[in-house]
Every structure is written in C-alpha cells, then in structure tokens.
Image (cartoon, rainbow, N blue to C red):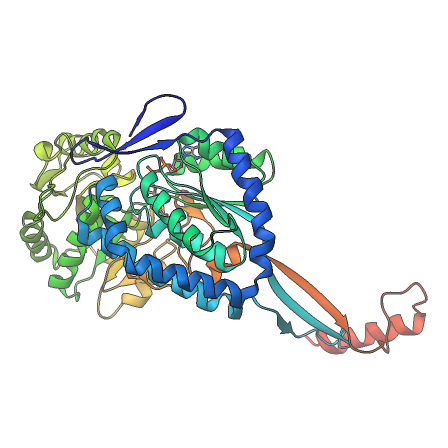
Amino acid sequence: MTATDTATFESLNPATGEVVAVHPVHDAAAVAEAVAGARAAADWWAGLGFGGRAKILLKWKGVVTRRAQQLAEVVHAETGKPHADAMLEIVLAIDHLSWAAKHAAKVLGPKKRSAGLLMANQTAIVEYQPLGVIGVIGPWNYPVFTPMGSIAYALAAGNAVVFKPSEYTPGVGRWLAESFAEVVPAHPVFQLVTGFGETGAALCRSGVDKIAFTGSPGTGRKIMAACAETLTPVLIEAGGKDALLVDSDADLEAAADAAVWGGMSNAGQTCTGIERVYVHEGVYDEFVAKVVDKAKAVRAGSDGQADIGPITMPGQLDIIRRHIADALGQGATALVGGADAVGERFVQPTVLVDVPEDAPAMKEETFGPTLAISKVRDMDEAITRSNDSKYGLGGSVFAKRRGMELARRLRSGMTSINSVISFAAVPSLPFGGVGDSGFGRIHGPDGLKEFTRAKAITKQKFKAPLNLTTFSRTEKTDATVAKLINLLHGKR
Ligand code: NAD
C-alpha cells in the first residue's frame, strides 16, 4: 500500500509488491457525507424491524456464500494468505452473519422483567434499541472475519454502518460494501470509507453513535482520545500474546499440532494466535520434539503448496526480526528457524526455547510465525507466567483432569480446552479481551447488545394501593412501607 497523491492510494500484493487496485482517500468531508447518508438510512433500516432486517441479511449471506471464491481471491491478493485460509475466514464470517440475523429478535426484542413487590402494580419491560450509526474500523489480518464480527451484529441490531477497512485491505472492504448494496440498492445502510489513519480519525470525530475498533492497542488509545472529544462510546478489540498450557496428562500429539497451527497459521498474524507455550516439566522434552517435527514441515511462500503466506505489513518484519534476535542474544535457542528466518517478505517458522520471561518475545505481540516454549514445574507456575502479561485476549489449555480449572484461571476473554481458537468460531459466544487486549464484546448475544441501548419501560397495570410517587403520600403509607421492607429484607 502506497500513497499516490492526496486523493487516492494503491493496495499492494504483499507477496509480490504488485499493485492490486487504487482506492480513494476519504477526507473528513467525505466521511461526514457518508455518516449523514447512513444517518438517514438508519431510520429506514431500524423501521424494518427484526424480521425485515433478517430477511435482507440472510439474502446478503447467500450472495457472499455463492461468491465466496471471488472474495477469497481479493483476500489472497491483498493479504497474501493462502486461498484455503482466505476461504476459512469467509466461511466463519458467513456463520456469524447468519447467527446475528437469526438471533437478533430473540436477544434484543422486548422482554418482561419482574417489577418486584413494591412496584407490583407495574409491568416492567426491557428492550434493546439500535444506537443509530456505527463506525467500524478494521485491521488487515482477517479482513472479512474480523470486521464482520462488528458489521453483522451492528446491522442485525438495527444500525447503519460506515466501515473503514485497513489501508492494506481496502478491496476486501469494497467487495463487502458493494455486495451489500446489491441487496439494498436504495438506502446507504452499509457504506465504505477508505484511507489511512486520518480517515479513521475523521470517522471517530464524525458524530457516529459508537466506534467498533479492531487493531493494535496503540491505535486503540488514539481512537479513545479522539472519541473522548465527543463522548462517542468505543469498543476496542486489540492485540494479544496468547499462551497455550500443556499439562502432564495432555494428549501431546494434539497439543503439539495445535501449538504449531495456533502459532504459525496466517504466518502468525492472528490476534488470538499462540505466541507462548508453558509445558509441564514431566512432558516437556517429548512435547518440544513433536513441535519441532511439525514446525519443520511448515513452509512460508507464495506458491500454491506453501502453508503460510507473506508478512502482510512490511514494518512487522522488523519487529519479528528484533524479537528473535533479542531472544537469541539473551541466551535463547532456536530449534527451528531463528536469526535467518526473516526474509524480505516471508518469515519461516521459528521455535524458540529458554527465552527469558522479560524478553520482548515474551511480553510484546510478535505477530509472526514464532513460538516461545518454556518449561514449568507445575500448572500453577504456568498460570502465573501466562497471566503476567499486559494482554489478555485468548488462550488454550491442553489437559485431561484440570482443563476446566486452568481455563477459568487464565486471565483472558476466551480460552479453548484441548483445541485452539475454537471460541472464535462459535457465533453464540462473546469475543473480546482484558487489559491491553481491549474491552467490550463482539459475537453472540453480548455482541448484539454492544450495538444497542437498553431501554426500560414501565406500564401501570392498576392504581397502587400504596402510592409512593406522590406529594399526597401519607404517614400511614410510609409506615406501611417501612414495615413491608423490614419483613422483606430485615430478617438477617
Ligand atoms: P492498526 O492499529 O495499525 O490499524 C487498525 C485500523 O485503524 C486501520 O484501519 C487503520 O487505518 C486505523 N487507524 C490507524 N490510525 C488511526 C487513528 N489515529 N484513528 C483511527 N483509525 C486509525 O492495526 P493493524 O495493523 O491493522 O492490525 C493488527 C492488530 O490488530 C494486531 O495488534 C492484532 O492483534 C489486532 N487484531 C485484534 C483482533 C481482535 O479481535 N482482538 C482481531 C484482529 C486483529
């Protein structure tokens, strides 16, 4: 991706450096225009109700499904990831779109709540109303799956969306917006703005009703600062340094397979990718030998046979190189890959052992196909070291007896037991992190509610025998209420 002039920029194929397409740089005025259009469309969209919107979203789902190969081509061209991996993220995104469309009414529709004894004469109702216009700012590493986790849920909840994709994957954003416009040609319910950070910042300041951001924690801080100016609420899905824990009774073959796939698929450019592995000392040697065998079989390249593609963002190569070099300089050993693994566009799998716990390779997001494996005395030490991180996105535990206990103790938003990253593929589960990994939840009922405001309504059923909300309230009423509250709550 390079800026050509102030009005357009090129997206580049990271495997070859060739230009994929040219896109407009939307400035603040263009962003404001898109948001104004979305604002008008939002009323029409909300007015369709859950049923009307579900029908349209499921129609869009059909279009995306039937043309998934074409979309995968765009993802492949802009990110360099293998075609099959592009298809995998599209398949998962389709599943989320379907779930959001089908479940919004049940999750967000009006529900009666108990009004309690004091307000027994009232019917109490809660419903979840759309916020209006949602600004979605996305990353490049999963350019379909990641933004769809906000877009599908925001639309299903009744909002219009203005989407700013990463400057590395604008074509994917364009494909999504154009395919939606085929289904809803007359109303700009889902619009696209393209460009760099300035375009995203303009979206933050445009008066949208919420920003759903996915990207790095550093950019997340800038987004919050910009949104603070207008008290625009934000949802932050940021980076991670996820750990995989291997207990002494784990299925080591499965754990090693999961560690290698979790750490190296998509060339390690996965927010919930495995970057650290803590292994019980009783099975450490056997586990490491299995990981080494499997990692040696993984190859980065751009031919059809390669397992992983290039590093999409050239600047990340320096970070990966620095993390590996620093670890080796501090006494770590590379059992696979190492200092020479980082090329001009590709990084070959790297397995490090004996990395000091305070090294950048253990503390900072590497975002490359690297694993740092550490031996632990017991699983308590594994938990302590895993949790000693500013991040807390996902994580994984391989264990037979203590899997659930260890999963609960990991300080993260999501954990898989005896698999990796499965939580992201379950549409009904919330997705999001703690600490520098962000806050708020996409996916599932929580994800739908993120894009709504809870509205409370009470409707009087009959005149209250004890009317508390009047100046003509008597002393007798107050005394009866005091007696009542004592009976209800004063026993202990
Ligand atoms: P990034 O933070 O560089 O950019 C993300 C988006 O923010 C881009 O669209 C960019 O143009 C925009 N942006 C940049 N500066 C901005 C500003 N000042 N105001 C508004 N918008 C601005 O992140 P990236 O490199 O595209 O993505 C990689 C990061 O995303 C990694 O840290 C990864 O872990 C994280 N990620 C998190 C999740 C998750 O769900 N938690 C999912 C995928 C990726």
